[in-house]
Image (cartoon, rainbow, N blue to C red; front, top):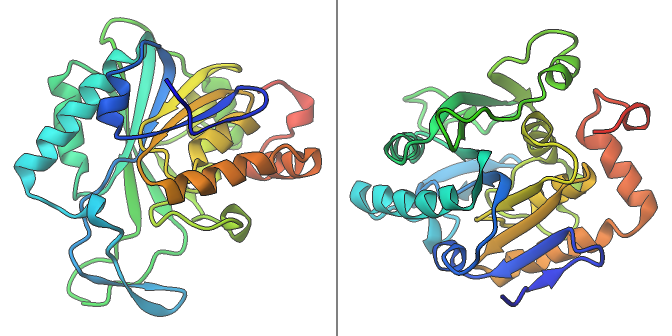
Length: 275
């Protein structure tokens, strides 16, 4: 299969295409999958960004076509994703109320075992302009394993260390993306590297293979490489692939690599232990 981009060390590969078609064409099993599928919330509404009103529309790929379409779409890609997981592998899927209930239903239908529903509490969410409901200040990330009977990997000790010696809870208060994370541009649904770093450290070991079927600007892959994991990303839009490529090429600079590595998990000293 032709790749759009592959890093010099072959630990970061991008493939351009529809994930449903691409996943059906290769035979490889991953230790973990992170997916940030369309939330289907582009409904011509208005939000606030940097103090200014902006349209919430992200593109036609995010426009809702009804519940039946959403369920069918989620069932298709999750079924293929399940086939690409190792027997002890896990999947993390992010969403909001627009799509996360469909995701959970399809995971159950496909015989995944749901482990947690993590709430990512955003530190600086945009206000609710209508003032007729609560401010949307969180997203949900469902964590599930492929096999209900096969044990999965979880780095309990490391998560406890990150959480000041206490058991890691399922509510994570983490900042949104920072300026240095969008040097080459920004995906409209981009996740912060700190969020992906925590997910990767919680559920994979060094040199693990990670798949992101909706890789966008490559955040999952950047976090994976900074943490010594390997990555395959699938993305349809070339403008996002270009951003991901430039972000990965930036890591070839040892000084930048070291700087970013220290930022994504500030609770740890990477020099003191392998991660």
